[in-house]
Image (cartoon, rainbow, N blue to C red; front, side, top):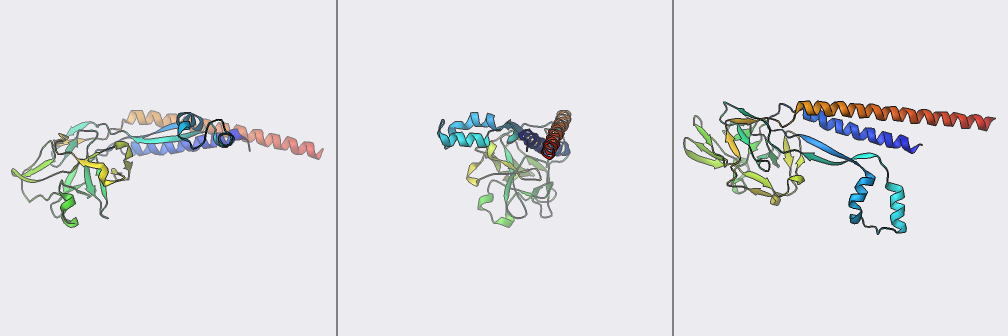
Length: 271
């Protein structure tokens, strides 16, 4: 099979994967606290030049030459997926439990129904049936003392009919009585976070998450919108669709050439 056909097919698959990321961004334009995702596309040869010193093969050897002849091609691949944690637009809210997280490196820590801990940028909060502060999806928001609290009682519980105040450091007061403080999660390396659905992020180890007691990261009564720019994403969508169409035409051309060559060879053999 012609190598150009494989390269065009691989490049088209890469564009399909990029299309998935773009459509996810567009679907979350109005999701509170959603952070835009993107990909870095590069071909193997460029990656190899950047990382050749990390390979376990010595340069200019027979083994290295075999590795290169097998592996090097210029098929574009998704080299890296990343998340843009910059703040989105701020919008005034009448909900006292809406808080904007203004620092790029700060997150709320939440607990999912199966007990897993995740990070979230969504500061649009509510109270559950027991009065605990939860996210819109019902995930309980962890307080600074969660590690020393029984599993079922973790979080900040708000008594009924109290006036809530949330300070810039995440302290929650009910009628001037301190009810608790949000665990303000700061990852040691933000690049290690992985999107995990429902606007949540998974982290490798709990030891890599620190609690910032003086974060100055919260603004009460402010809802932080998604940082997705719909115009930019629509431009990216159109560009990606055009790239897919281009690779489809390249594949069709290669296939037609292959068919013509095969027919010609068969005809000459029969003659």
